[in-house]
Image (cartoon, rainbow, N blue to C red; front, top):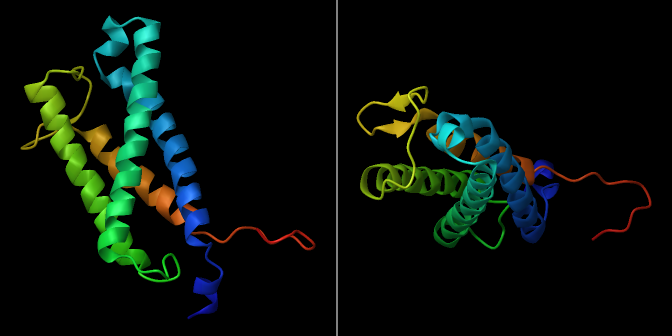
Length: 159
């Protein structure tokens, strides 16, 4: 093992950090891109707040499920000291794939939400650009942020 991998956090610490970074990242993203949905102009403030909280909670569940499934398939007991990139790649593919499916299901089939005309849409899959970017950027930042070594203050107890 390299000294860099020895500095990585314990798996439980990494999972907790990932959950926190994911929650914060998706909350900020949901707040930032909700004006691209019709609820922004048609909904009440209560409906908008509910949508942001509901979607952020769903994002957290999708992200944690994607990471846990990737760990079951590609991880080892040494994660996050080992198998960092296979787990990340699988997690990203699972989360991104689910997002494509969810956008299609909720826009085309269930008609649960609608994009405004200002939402950039990806041709062929007819999914919004911002949800797709969200599921590339937020998981990347949360995963690698969670794996960063913590600060080791002199005299601080190890936990």
